[in-house]
Length: 191
Length: 249
Image 1: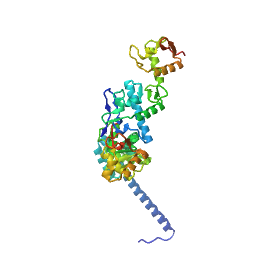
Image 2: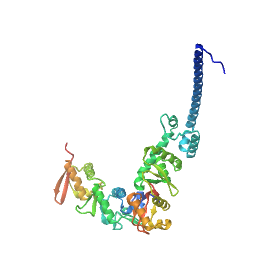
Image 3: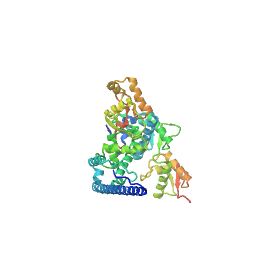
Image 4: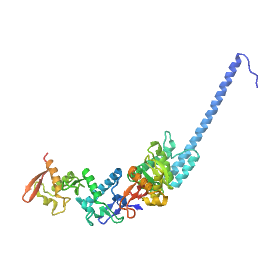
């Protein structure tokens, strides 16, 4: 049996390891497990980036037809990731700082950092600059759901908040309370 | 026998003849050395000529390379052994480099696949991956080339070695002794595309269940030579040996 890469319906190229049956079992040997986890982390992040997915939940293993179905399952070899297995992968991702439990204080759901909050901060500031929205007050809704689709469309608010906090720290933004919630104003950093 | 001279003159004469013998002998050996140099030069020129005309064939055509190696070994030189100090022919041919380069690529493949195959790779798989790395079609690198290159790697002491398991040659890149049971398991894995379950060992090899389980669990837990699959339809617990699976990188 040759293990080969597969292009799936969304145009994503699955790595060959995804067609190896044991990839879907949590490995009892710690060093083997860390190799497998590393592969899973890479796969999850590249897929999330490909489809612009921000959230991964342990439940995604059980709900058929979820956004994650074609990653967490492989129908061709009849294998799927079990919830406990995914849970340990999520734990590893949080430990590596490529994901964060969100909401905090639970371990069933994570926010994926296929871009780190620092990188999102740069993207955010660049977007505000290039669309001529410096020095104007923007609501979170203006950012997450802009009339023209942007790299920030649909960014989850907790992640947006983190990115803004980073910009505030470096003097590139200011948080502002607005009537219907939170807002922000961006400006060119003062040197 | 001629009469020995007597008196002081005899000493002179003896010394004289010894001197001329020495001169003669050094003249003789000088001419021999000259002759040898001449021959060597001739050999060098013709080998250089041969190398320059056939260099590409030697590098690219496996059967030609093999024939060339045969010829060289029959005259007692090994142009593929790699450049040594003063290894003018290796430099000339650029073949020592070729062999070392291949060696480096073998290490590359072995190391980069080690995580998943535990440091044991099938010869054909290695050839396939090395060919892919070099961007040459399969068949341009032969088993013979790999065997030679692996030999050049031996001074590194990294444990690169060719082992034969169940009639299949494999290259081992870790210092690990395989015991007899593991060898049997590996050969079954090769027949089965990597998948091994206890029942195979019990039915085909007449092992007891305990022995089969112990051997497989050791490979899994102690050696990291196989991966576990708990979703196997038939047995519920299958062991997969990555070095017996065929991977596309």
